[in-house]
Amino acid sequence: MTRVSFKEILVGIQMLFVAFGALVLVPLLTGISPSVALLSAGIGTLFFQWFTGFSVPIFLGSSFAFIAPLTIAIDQWGLAATQGGILAVAAVYLVLALLIRVLGVGFIQRVFPPIVVAPVIMVIGLSLAPVAANMAMGLTGDGSVELVSKAPAMITAFIALLATIIVALYTKGLTRMLAVFAGIVAGYVAAFALGITDFSAVQQAKWFAAPPVTLPSFHFEAMLFLIPIAIAPAIEHIGDVAVISEVCEKDFFKKPGLHRTMAGDGVAIAIASMLGGPPVTTYSEVTGAVSITGAKQARIMIYAAFTAIILAFSGKLAAFLSNMPTPIMGGIMMLLFGTIAAMGARSLLDSRTDLSSERSVIIIAVTLVIGLGNVVIQLGPINLQGIGLSAICAIVLNLILPHRQKSA
Image (cartoon, rainbow, N blue to C red):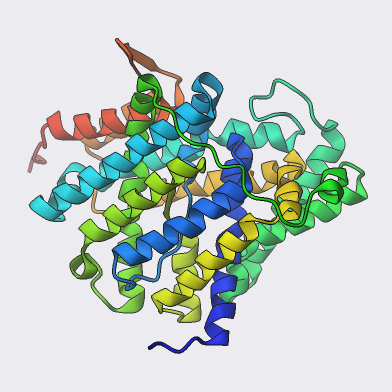
């Protein structure tokens, strides 16, 4: 029997706080309860660990790729129908897991090479840029309503952004991984000094409160709308497994197998859909923290998961997060969303993709314009737009455009 280590429990709690800032930003932006997001992340991580034989030190959290689609879906069809769409996303993961099991990892590399993945990742970051800018100026994400006066809002956003940058740039080790958390704290201090905080809801909230679980309903259009979005985070999952394999000096692609880790993500997403939380996927932030701390035991992520579940039942914490001034989130998101776009560009440069070829330029150009240009395709009940449509276009173009040999 494995002996429980108090030190490992503390490291597990610390791992949660590495992911905490980004984990709660997704539900706050999409109108989902942050306590349900914590509950989904905790339970989802436990099932992922069980599904992979408690062998991969990975924590699951809310995916940024779903921010814009979830916002649109919830506004158009409601939360319950959106949860049904998230369940369809889980099915995509499970189908991919089956294909990997049958066809091998090579099929993923053929269908989703860097020339497909990178521009889609750039679309994810750049499509969210207006939301970050609006919130930094004290507006709602769509810019339609002013929530905070512009001057104090921008000061607060700047301080939150500056704190995040300083911690990310000038600190080392695990502290660097807490950059988003530091930005939230600094932003709250600034907001309090400028008088744009309201803690009345926190004072009135109970210490213990059950998360507001929402059961899914099934709306065909919502399901078809969200299904294509699964492609980008599924590909990101493969990258995370590759990185954690290098960190742990183990080939997790072979044991427990990429098909099991992908299926573990799918099961976790299905659980989130049944609770009313956002889709949960492997978290790159925690993977980086594993590299820095050397905490390579999967049971540490189990301690992080139990901590997330416990915090999900804190009414005070839920009220504190739900009433966070929007400029704080806006300031931090200006960096986070820009970083996502930059990571997409960097993956193109780091890959062996020939960016000078007309074929590459065409795939990148069309993917970016379709993803960022609000192009909508209506095929009967199917409504394709944004990230999902850009991902489909990138895949199709990569499959049909011929590779031309360079002339001598």
